[in-house]
Image 1 (spheres, rainbow, N blue to C red):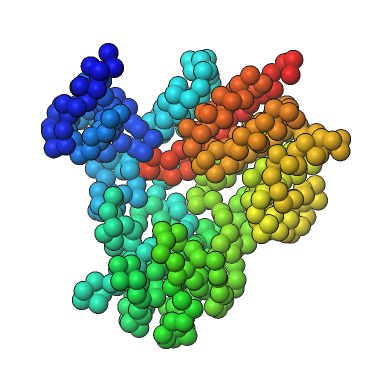
Image 2 (tube, rainbow, N blue to C red):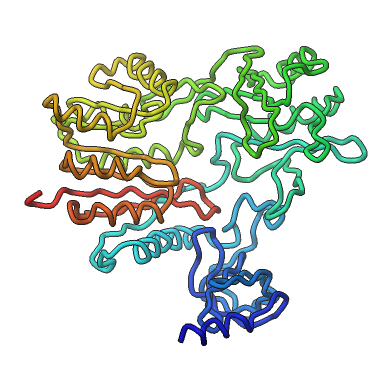
Length: 466
């Protein structure tokens, strides 16, 4: 049987065209179908569609293709409103009606659970995805690469899908209008003052990236110019011109990254003018955002996400809470008014300093923050006689560290609330805990409309007898 399957795979060649029925969406927003039992990924194709595909890549276990013709179109297919949607690649699902995007994101969570857990999916409470009333202009931060054309014109935007061609973007439909306006004006100023732009091939030039962050509630904007070196010709004139034309820019910062790398930020950050931070508000909490501080990119949905975390924690005012991977303390502070005590930890010392500052600033006296890992602190606190009732985690895309999950199994909090930005690692981690914890429900939240990303909150309850 194995040999037969390998033979069918070998028959498919790059450039070959073949009919395909799309069964579902993959985790990157691409259509997924099966040709002679082999999985084929097709960007731009939608579930239920019958398409003619040209093979672009053939691997032993899967193939990739592009749509040559749509024979039967999905009833949910729409015209993408963005004029550069197909070139840019920043969004993957603008061609799918928004209500259906929410259903497909729930399905992506289900697929991950089917693939990576032994749970009975039909018995799980997987709730409808919480979407946005207006799913546009939601991102509070843009990071536009800059480049120079042969005629001297400076462009700013994103690299095209699977290419190193810079696509100029003047008005990104998912960015906050302020970030669009400021990025475009800064681009013009760099062009007018003939500032040397970094050329990756020649490894010459100075300005690499324009980073813009806007406070939705404050209306304040921070601009960070990423440069290859500290010195920049006409720097003071450029700064003065930005402040003159853009009074909403309250903070001007330079970050130096001279390395040959795809990472945006370098280690050294210099405050140029205005404030060092901008202000942003979430609910009743106010945050100071420095150039390097992590902050959720969609403030409107962040309030919904954190409210769902609060619901999952089901607080009565008596609970002791641990906020693992706490960052600057946003989730723990959101929960503090319903808890007896919050303790948070993170391995990044600067984040812990910010978290404690945020707690002090808001007069939240029942929250304390320490540097280190949860697997270190949880057993230590239990030894000291302090056992958490609820542990909340919001880990990176790689999921929870196995040592943390082992610590959870050992410490046995009554509730474990898992906030995930990657359904695959969420499913693997839930499966690892499934002997000790019952999955009460899962709540997907759409933090990034028109992309394939989906966040999910899971409420896990300690099983009886544990």
